[in-house]
Structures are given as C-alpha cells and as structure tokens.
View 1 (cartoon, helix red, strand yellow):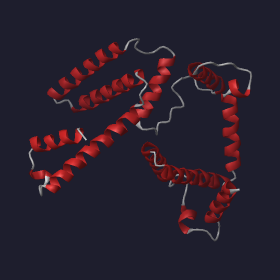
View 2: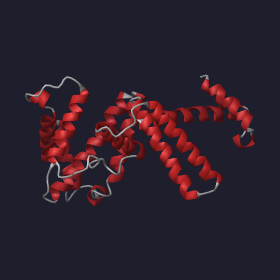
View 3: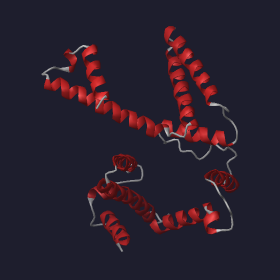
View 4: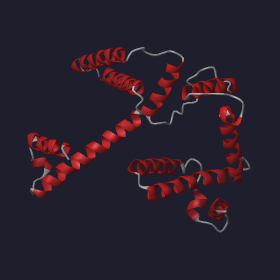
Length: 252
C-alpha cells in the first residue's frame, strides 16, 4: 500500500542512516513548511490546476506524516492513532449518517455540532477553540459566526452598513487629529465590520480578499507590460497615464 510505503520512507529519513536535514527537524521548525504547503494547495485549487493539486496534497500529507513520526519517536502517538482519532470524530459528528439522528438541513447539523462540542469540552465560552494562528480575516469570520448562532448579531444588513459608516467617520476623525493609536484601532474596527457584511451575504472574506489581490496583481502587471512595450518606466509615468492603462486592464 502506497500510504504504508510513505510512512516507511519518512521513518527512514528520520532514522540513523537518514537525511541530515530531516533528522534535524522539530515540530516547531516544520510549522513554516506546513503553512507554506497549505497555501500552495489553496493556490492550486483556486487555479483548478489538478496536477498541482495532486502534488500539493502529497506535500501536505508528508507534513502530517512527519509530524506523526516525530510524536512516535517520543512515544506519544503515531499516524495510526491520528487516523483512528479523526475516523472516530467524523462518526461521532455525523449521527445522522452513522446513527439514529435525523437532520434535514446544514443548519441543524451545525447546531448539533455546537451543542455536542459544548458537552464534551470543559470550556465555558462558545468562542474557545478558534485557533489564534488563523489569518485574521478567517478568525474574525469564524468568531462572528459563532456569535451569530446564539443571536448576538444585527438583524438587518442595513444596520451593519450604518455601523460601517459610523466606523469610517471615527477613522476620519482620528486621522484628522493624528491620533496614531486610534487610527490603527479604527481601521481594525472597519475591517471587522466588513467581515460581518461578508458573513451576511455568505462570502468568505479571506477568499474574497485573495481574489481581489489576484485581480490587482493581474492589472498592475498589465500596466508594467504596457509601459515596457512603450519603453517607459513606471516611475516616469504620471498617475493619469497609469490610471488609463489600469482602466484598459479592467476591460480585459
């Protein structure tokens, strides 16, 4: 079986006659590669590049297996314990599939998950369990969704837009008065309200921003290419000239 072969390969890499680089790694040193592989997989998914998706899934799987190998060497757990744990969790979380519950909508499933987790955890806060290491937009979105599920939210999206206007005015005032700490705080408040608007219309803010960044890069590279074809440097072009090329790029 290929999976068992991968486990053997990772164990050999970490063994006495293995790779000096792999033997040197720790849980902490591997964190950056885990994050990189995850985002490379996301990039491949967004591009619908299936060869890259396959490759990046493999790279991410390697990170899971090597983390499990490190734990095995310390006598804590191994990859089989990881698989057993997630299998049990998925069965427990889907009693409507593997048990006698009857849920008819995704909302009923989520509501049951929340209640089930609360019963199993000692935590008293519904906000606990959202990783602090998540990108800020994703973390804000998940926290807000939890608050929404217990009714702590605006009822109408128009109310959220009113809050956004209020926060923008507070930012404008802080900028006019040059209150640097307040400026940072007010920008954070605006971003947080924008996340709430995204949740209202079922848009993932992290994905939305990633798409906007890609769109910005595509259009800016168009400006660079057009400037190059005219033997012009961007630094020597006026804003009006660059803006004209930007509008051309928008039409592509």
